Image (cartoon, rainbow, N blue to C red; front, side):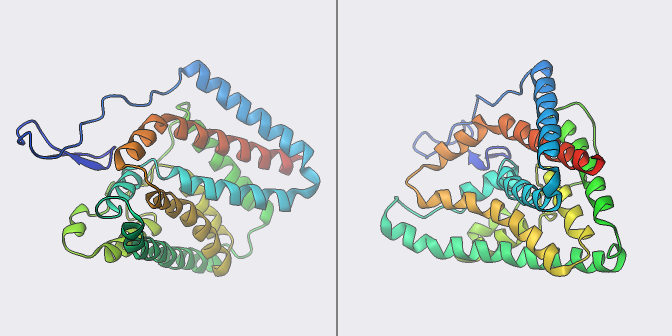
Length: 283
């Protein structure tokens, strides 16, 4: 038996008897755009960022806060396109044939999964806010924004393949064997906590670094927890697709189809918002 880490599900080899249920390996994957197309995306993102920065400069603090929260939430959604995102959607499924009763029995799993994310936000956000309160409480707002903006632009270019940036991550997945040892609601809680801590598993979006940096630089525990919580809400919500009568295969195929577009959207948003912030600071 082999594990497809990208698809987040098991596929059985040809040695398994034909009578056994199996999921065929994916053979069609999303392809990235050409370097020319990605260069146009990069220029478009930066042009939009400069234009927005000029037009919205008078409401700089409000605009930057709002755009950052949008980026944080969408970054959480985009983290679904990672091994653990695939795995969560695949493994945290209602048992048996889809019905009202099967979904009702599965609902506690979704609730405990969300609670796990909440615990992760409290612990990670609280730790970042506490460290920031000691190290960065006196940091000027403009300096904080400038640092995060430069980082966002760098990682935006990284996502589009034009700049190599460091990507320290713990390349680990949620433990698949937990489903054989615990009830579904317990697994939901464990998975939610592991994913909600964000650095215990592999997260395939550098928006996480911008979110972490912002939580650290706020120098305030409540603000830091709020930032991580917004990111975690975006991470948790996609599991709600399991409330719908959609097969796991359909979900996994859709994710695979849009894998590269998610990366490009991530890069576009990082470049646009980073450029907008720098534009506002220089006017």
